[in-house]
Length: 341
Image (tube, rainbow, N blue to C red; front, top):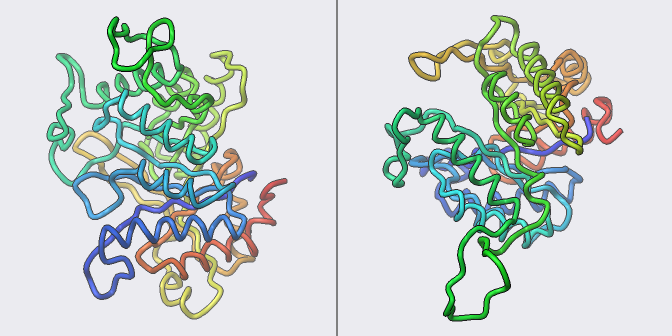
């Protein structure tokens, strides 16, 4: 395991029990947690994107702010729903955030998951073309986004521009060289993982995937990763791909940990339906003493296959507690898992 970071969903609620009671709290605490995680030596700060929800929804201002306040930590998403995106505008925003961070952006994108409203992307002005599904639309938008990130000009310049143009066709600016190689696809199935490999995207595999074989989650996820790597090799890409998996992992170090996560009940996979057609398997959570965690995690085949582990954090419990959660794993569990070996 070369890299360990955190993944925050950025939930907020005005409830008195929440430590994150407004959108401003969610954004500012996300910045503070990323700064603290870098100080702990964590490798990445990643954020989930959801629309029409009391969660993080507009990632690029947040990523840029974190990039300006940190120096080393990778900054990413897991994932941006491409059903909602304009690929050219997104390329500008992503490039700007990447330049501010000095080239540390690791941008996870995907078709997305069921949202809070029906066909929410329609309110953003997008709809599938004739004969397309919404998943097709997301993949088409992704391919356009990847094409723009190549940095080649395609727009015919105005012969009488307000400001002088460089020669040739123009591209969206700013352009961040190297960002194209730091795009990740959040794959829910083996087929979309293979598709991502063919297009030269890194792979993000979350705590759920399509239940394709009925086997335990970590075994199915490991098979997905192996299929991805085989497709990558077949495609002939010249660089090595990266693969991340996400897990809810809590080291029970004190009474707070035992109160929040020591009750058990999440130590097995669960099966459910994302929609009327898609049967999904949800991976277990881990909560135990560090020595027991190490034993359990070493049996997780997908963690062994991946190079990056993202720890999902309970952001509404506050920055200080989440720093404790991350530090407990980095100090007492990660070294035995081969972190940075």
